[in-house]
Length: 297
Ligand SMILES: O=P(O)(O)OC[C@H]1O[C@H](O[C@H]2O[C@H](CO)[C@@H](O)[C@H](O)[C@H]2O)[C@H](O)[C@@H](O)[C@@H]1O
Image (cartoon, rainbow, N blue to C red):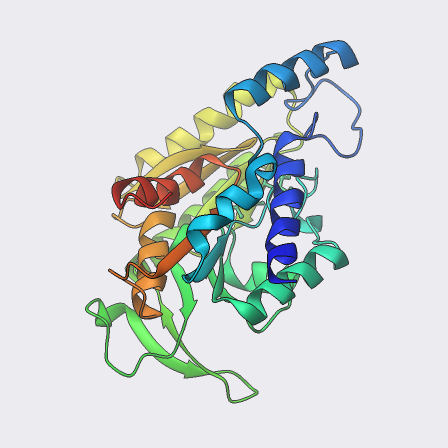
């Protein structure tokens, strides 16, 4: 059952990753996401992609061997991993079977979702209480309750939810909030004439979506983003799927969030722990680097 749930998460995640097209609903006009290509081209692309990225499912049992006798800890990205990539970021819902598989996994292993979105938004999509949530690319973590203060204690508070469940909130980019709010207003105002542009408030970071922006308008949009950024030297831009992500320039990313969670869950430096991380985007590579640095495969 346990293996089945993990297998299912893998299957769903990989299916999304390997899906021939990230486009879910057709949109009219020549927009950023449209890559005109017939089924043959798509099949060829898929086959050559598979050669370089062999399917983990094909070796699932072999992959699970190192897990024997170890504490599995599961880390997941949200968009493109637990939910399909869709045209409207506000409608990236999780399917019920995915929620149920995630629930099974979370009841058996410590499980955390590390997303670029705001923590509240991810919780609103997932709605599971047995999961730890890290939003804003790991800059807003709701982790296990900590008796002893963690070394970054100035960013940490202990809290309780309405059901009395205790947890610890860790927010290492707190002092950037006033600038983020200003930047958000500026970006919304300055991009409102670019059809299809969507500025999303992810609390400690901002996403500027261009999935629906006409190709000829993209450059203007990017220039606005650079121009706003030039007034805020303590911020930088990273890129995801048809999105520019504006983030405070602190040394904290999904990889740091993963280490923080492993640490606060009491699993750091333990050879008896096997963390899993499933993610589909560029920012997930920060978490994969932690695995490489610590020789966890
Ligand atoms: O770290 P993640 O959980 O993967 O978040 C990364 C970005 O995900 C969302 O945008 C992406 O998914 C949207 C819905 O499928 C899609 O419309 C968009 O084009 C994708 O970039 C989210 O809306 C962003 O704020 C996150 O930065």
